[in-house]
Image (cartoon, rainbow, N blue to C red; front, top):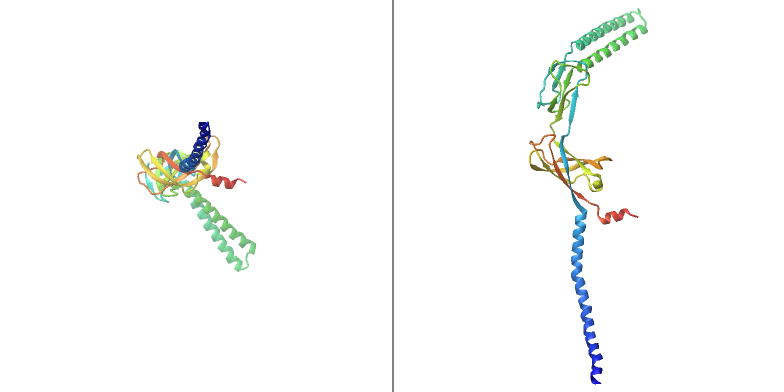
Length: 282
């Protein structure tokens, strides 16, 4: 009988000791696991907010043009060669312009005759030998002859091809004394200013791209890495390739770089945060 009375009491005592122990151990484990889960979630969100995009890159000049013939004729002089450096306004090619020059001479002579006739009409008008209408017609003939001279001079000026900007000759498509039609390509001119970088990024990352983002450029031909900055994002997406065209500018000028060099560019894209996305939702 005594032993049966002690069993419930001892069980109650053990339960009383066990409950406080269990109550204290649960908060301690929660406090240890909470910082770890918070740190892991912070790292995970940071990885999601920043991602690196690697894409092919092409170096291109800021200015480039294919200079063509503006008239039909025979090339009398080709003043440039492959790789030559030219300044703005330098003569690149010259056509045989004897016919065009002759037209200028004829127009100039007709202008002189029209002026003499107008002066004679003015003297006769002072003598009341002619009327105002004849004087006005004579002056109109002067204006007509002047316009014809201007037209002939413009046609003559087309015989000379000049560089529209400073740069280097990238290609020559014709030879001296070659007869060609209007619009025939003569030379390719690339500007000697700073180069730009052309990129194509997946359109799915369009919301992560913006002007001013840093770009790391690895050029295959030089084996070096260069710093650049994203300067433009195209307003159109290629629906077939699902890409968007980008442009970046180099932070510094490098003499060893040339148009046409290729490489790989790495851009750190910033993904929109959860708070920003929540603000856009109603």
